[in-house]
Amino acid sequence: MPSIVVLGGPGQFDPVPVDSTRVVKGTPVAAADNRYSSADGCFHAGLWTSTVGCWRIAYTEHEACTILRGRIRLTGDDGSACEFGAGDAFVIPAGFAGTWETLEDCLKHYVIYEPA
Image (cartoon, rainbow, N blue to C red; front, top):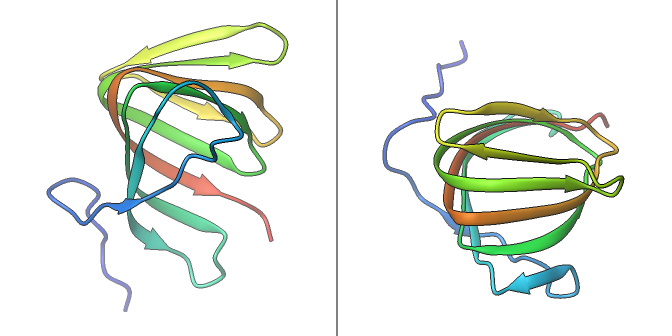
């Protein structure tokens, strides 16, 4: 029988390199504590953190996020921009392209679904 996976509390963060060719400004450093992955590898949930910086993104997955600490700005290639801070929850749909800017060191819960 599967066990419940708790997303909060202390964890083990592993570095998630930010591709230097995608960095727009700063020297962002990111890390993740993936707490759950489905057997088929399509669904993931955990914690993610980033220092200040901005980089290009192009989503092939769907991601639901809740910001726990810090502040970020997402700007689409169409120029639309949204800022989120602690307590804000949002979804980034597959196909979204633009920039992720961490304005203040950030910690978020994430849930990712990427069809096989």
